[in-house]
Length: 105
Image (cartoon, rainbow, N blue to C red):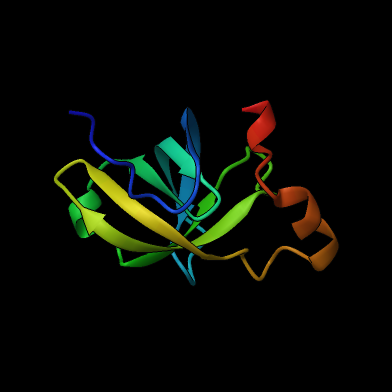
């Protein structure tokens, strides 16, 4: 018997490198985004146990696709995050381009 999908939004397997920046810091931590939706992601990174509950996820190498994240679950090697908002550093004009285009994934 198949499990019923409980997610509210469609997700895609992403498996793409990204970076994490803690609020108030310029330091970057490498990570991999594995599953991605318009509302959140599954992330692997070093030392996930010591990461703060909120941080900025940089989805592009230029840093123009960012999301403020809140951790909603955590294991030894993975984080499940929900996107709280588009990072305040991104202008309103850029935020239109930041939207994840699920049709091209």
